[in-house]
Amino acid sequence: MSGEAIAAEKAALRKLMRARRAALPPETRAAASVQACERVLASFPELKQAPDATIAGYWPIRDELDPRPLLQALAGDGYRLALPMSVARDEPLVFRAWKPGDPLVPDIMRIEAPLPTAPEVVPWLLLVPMLAFDRKCCRLGYGAGFYDRTLAALGAGGATVTVGLAFSVQEVERVPVTEDDAPLDAIVTESRLIIG
Image 1 (cartoon, one colour):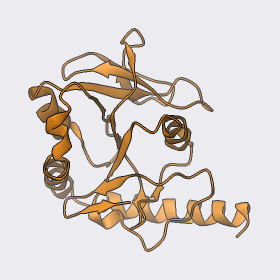
Image 2 (image 1 turned 60 degrees about the vertical axis):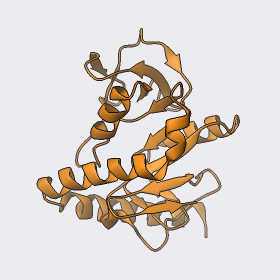
Image 3 (image 1 turned 60 degrees about the horizontal axis):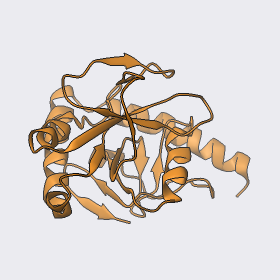
């Protein structure tokens, strides 16, 4: 399939999945977010053996699955946390240290991020938002390529575990991918864990 055909397929799927996710009632999204966050804790017992590891979440936008219950729980257990920051349109994300209560400022994509003075870190576990996913742990993002570039950069070291967070209604039969689209290590929803 040509690059243009894949791009068109992705664009159509993005439109469909935005509508599907937006159709979830707010109370359903809130309950499912808590369930997915609990599933992460239950599914990755190695978290208990890595209390010095840095875990990078994300600040939810629109109607994304909200990882903040998980980040609050991890902070309560003493884990070091980070959030991503977009610094330039064609660059990977930068991760900066953050804990609940720290001030946030909009980055270049107008997403809440730590202050630019917060220390830059490399996450051991990276929580990734998305629009769609499949059973091969391929994800569809918003199209700007920030996470694709970030996953490629982190993959060079091989030390970061990547876990996508999504609602179960975001699963599709197949996510269209190119060679630049890296699969995740796992995807967690409110109802299941998928290992790549």
